[in-house]
Length: 309
Image (cartoon, rainbow, N blue to C red; front, side, top):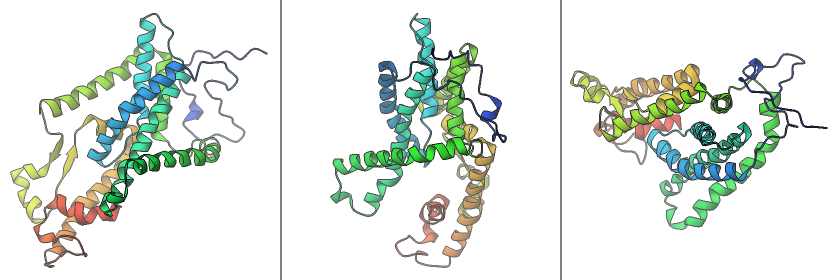
C-alpha cells in the first residue's frame, strides 16, 4: 500500500488550540504513515550547529534576565529561513519534519543551559567548587538530560495527547506555528525573518550605539529620588527585544502574573523590608547585611528575592 500523500499545509486546525470534544480526534498535520524526509544529514548538521550557537546565547540571556528562553523558537525561524535560502539557490527545500528535527536538537541548548546556569552556581554558593571539576560539570547536565528524556517518554502521551488543549504550552505552540508558517512559504516566512532582523537592530542600537538604555529605571529621574532613597520604591523596565518577544509569546495572562509579582516585590515587600530593617542595626537574618545601608536593588537581591525562590 502506498504511503498517504501530504497535502499542502495551510495552517494548524482549529482543534489544535482547544480541548477536544467527546469523540473528536486530533489529526496531525503529517500522518504517521506518510513518507517525508525527517532525520537527514542536513537536519542533524544544522541542528548541532544551532545547539552550539544557542548554548552561548541562552547562557547570556539566562544570566542577564534571570529567566531562560525557549531556544526552539529562534532556531525554528533560522531553519525556515535556511530552507527558503535553499529554494532560491535551486536546491531541495527542507521539509517541516526536517525543520522540526533542527528545532528539537537545538532546543536542548536552552534546556541544558537552564539547568546548568540555575543549578551549578549552587556549588560555588555552598563553597564546594574545590571538589568539582570539568567532569562533574559535564556529567551532571548530561545525566540530567538523559533522566529527563526517560521521564518524558511515559509522560508525553498523557500531557500532550490525553490532556490536549488543557495545558497552553505557549512556547511549543509558537514553535509549531513558525514551522507551519515556513511550510506555507511566501510572505508569511518573510514576516518571521523580518521580525528577527528588527529585534537584532533594536538590541544592536541599544547595546552597540547606546541609543537608549537597555534597562529603564526611575532611580535616574531626580523627581523620583524621594521614592528611591527614602521609601526604597523603584520601577525598572527592560527594553530588550528578547524580553518583549518573550512577553508576546507567553501571552498577556502569564505576563501579567509575572508583572504582578514584580510590583509586589518592588513596591510592597522591598519598602516593607527597608522600613523594618531601618530599626535593626544588624541584618534581619544571620549572614545577611544590615538593611539600613542598602539601596532598593540590594534589598531585593539580599532579602526579597529569597521569597520568590
